Length: 153
Length: 153
DNA sequence: ATACGGTTCATACTTTCGGGTGATTTTAGT
DNA sequence: ACTAAAATCACCCGAAAGTATGAACCGTAT
Image (tube, rainbow over all chains, first blue to last red; front, side, top):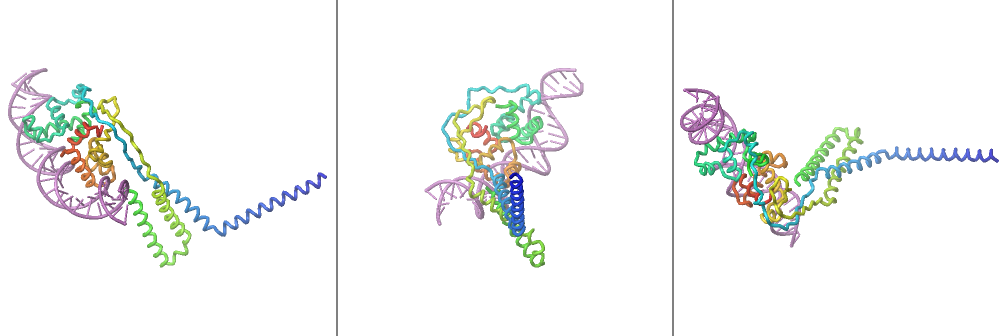
């Protein structure tokens, strides 16, 4: 009984293995026959993915700012506290500070000169010194730096 | 936006070049020798393009909606809240706002152009519009006004 | 008295800005 | 499909800004 069963089981297993082998060979053959198609498909899929990924990476998200509701601008009650120690540290003189403030409010060299009753050249000299001390090269940079340092409001 | 188009145009050109190359190879009877490579390349390029196109066409543009309120304190502790209604009122576009902010931090036209991947001329155009809308004639004035209006921090 | 910092001014030169104009290409909305 | 707004770019020109250098004057602190 047991022997017969073993035989049957043995044959069964062999058959199964053979069938599996056949299937695999068939599949392999198929794959081999259509190798180009397979590769093409692979490449297509891969590059399709890459394309989609690339596009997503390179596309900037469109920022749409909606909504409003308001009024009320700057808080005029909050007092500005001048960072005197920073001014001293940078060695900025009184006159330079004056020019710096005027410049920050948007006056041109000519206008500052008129307001301070000096020559435009003097204003330029002051500005050069200011730029040196703040280590910048442009008005806008000077304004930004002076603001963050608490030198001007 | 432009970058996307540039990308597509770039791929178009690449495709054209590739086709020309194919012609040449065909003439040289090399096409068949490297047929697989050629096809693979073609497929790759085509599906890369298709992927980009698909992503662009089928993907809904991500829209960031910023909801804001009011009250603006230029206090170092308080966070800056953009005055959106003022921006809308003045008709300042997103790109213009970008340029405005960069300018306020002290960048030159050239530097802004590099950062935004556009021509310096474009920056100048944006700035002109900004000055018009803010009714000013100089950067420093623009910065000051934009700040007091709560348009920039 | 004199050395020093702050202020003033000048000249010459280069670079950056800003105005004006016009045009093309996207993108969005009717 | 058509239109309006937004974004891009170009070219010219004059004005403003910035660089470099030198110099004079004036208090004041050593």
